[in-house]
Image (cartoon, rainbow, N blue to C red):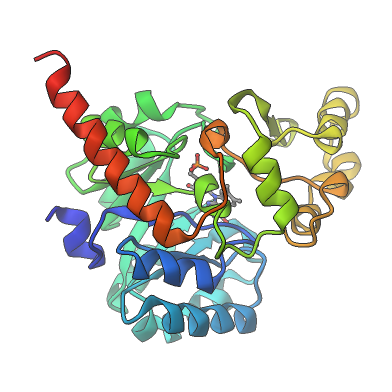
Length: 319
Ligand SMILES: Cc1cc2nc3c(=O)[nH]c(=O)nc-3n(C[C@H](O)[C@H](O)[C@H](O)COP(=O)(O)O)c2cc1C
C-alpha cells in the first residue's frame, strides 16, 4: 500500500488522465474495475452529458471508485459547472483540476469530501497548490499529449524536482506508455502514474477507430506542439492539418487567423467523428510504444507485469 492506494482507494496507483472528448464513462469505469483509477473527462461535455458518463462509469466500475477531470479554463461558466459537480460529490471519489487557477476551488471540493488532485508542470506550481491544500500533485512533463505547461520541463527532470519540493504524494504523467515507464516514475520518486495517450488506444475508449489506428501507426517523432504563438503548448499528432496550423502560426499568428483551426470543435471532429483530415488529435510522445488496440483489462495486466519486470531489472542492474 502506498499513499495513492490509501487516498484514491484503488488497487494499483495507475490513473487514467482526463481526456478531452474521449475520456468517457465506459473507459473510466473499465480502468477502475481493472484496479486502476479512471477519470471521466469533462472537457467537451455539457453537464447533462457528464452525468450520463457518470451513470455509465458506475455501471462498469463494479463499485470501484473513479473521478472527474476538470480543466478549469475549458468551461465558460466555471461556477455553474463546479457547483453541479459539487452536487454529484457523493458519486465520485476525486477530481483533478488542470488548465487554469485551481486555488479558488480546492477547499470547496475537499469540503464536499472529494480527494483533490492538481495538475502542475513545475516545482513552483507544485509548492503553490500544495500550500492551497491539494491532496495529490499530478506532475505532467512536456512529453504528454494535450495541453502542457509553458515551462516545457520533461518528465525525467520534472518528477524528482517536484518530489523534492513537496511532501504530499506525486503522480507522474507524460510519456508513460508501458510498464518500464511506470517503474521509471517510481524510481524518480513518484507515488503513482497518470497515463493518457495509451488509454485512447483501448477498446473501451470512445475515440474513433481512425484515431486509434493513427496511434498504432504513429512514432515517437510524429508529435508536434501547436498554439505556441497563442501562449499555449498543445502536443498533437502531426498531419497535413497540423502542418497548416504551424505555417499559419509562423506567417500570420493571432487568434483571428488561428481560431478556425485550433478550436476544440476540430479536435472533436477528428477524435470522435474520425475525420482526421479536418482536425487534430491530442497525442503524447509515448505514441511510438503503442502497437495494438486491446481491452483495458488486458492493458492493465500488461502494464503491471511489465512494471514488475522492469522493477526486477532495476534492482539487478548495477548495485
Ligand atoms: C486525448 C487527450 C486528451 C487530453 N485531455 C485532457 C483534459 O481534458 N484535461 C487534462 O487535464 N489533461 C488532458 N490530457 C492530458 C492527460 O490527462 C495526461 O496527463 C497526459 O496524456 C499524460 O501524458 P501521455 O499522453 O504521454 O500519457 C489529454 C491527453 C490526451 C492524450
